[in-house]
Length: 184
Image 1 (cartoon, rainbow, N blue to C red):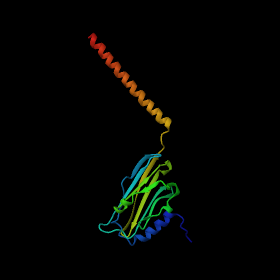
Image 2 (spheres, rainbow, N blue to C red):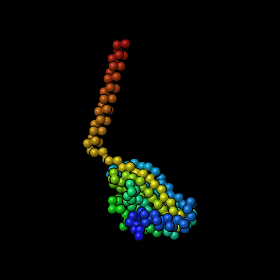
Image 3 (cartoon, one colour):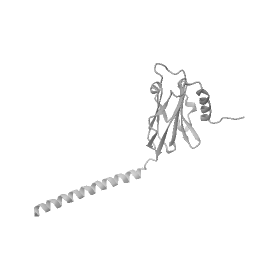
Image 4 (cartoon, helix red, strand yellow):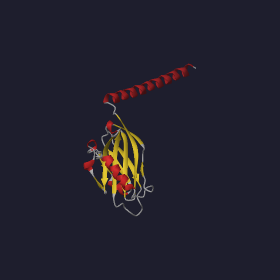
């Protein structure tokens, strides 16, 4: 007997079984940025768009957005029949993901990921399944470590010293020009 333990595998198997009942090819999910970079402790908005048929709402809407790192999947955002299912969200994203519910009606999935961590880096996949299609798109997020206060202080010191050296050089040139003008 085969036991399915991965939520992503369950979702994929369900989606594959439903594909035969959808109009594949006319339904598309796109990502606004295929690659983005941010610094630790900052926020970022990930956005996908999907085809919305003119004049009709889907009778069901299933959205599954996750972070894939290696062979592990962490659920970021889940909508089932139009309602968010926060209980299935991976604990590491708890309290850090905000969605724009109004954008969903327009065929946009906008997720703000707050207080980024370096371990949030990876491939984000968003799959959308409606009664008129199934599609997915990916984007890669790279989160770099935040500079320490000491590093920021040194950068400021270097900038100030460079500006001071440039000012001294400019004053020296002006003085030399003034002396040269008086002698010539």
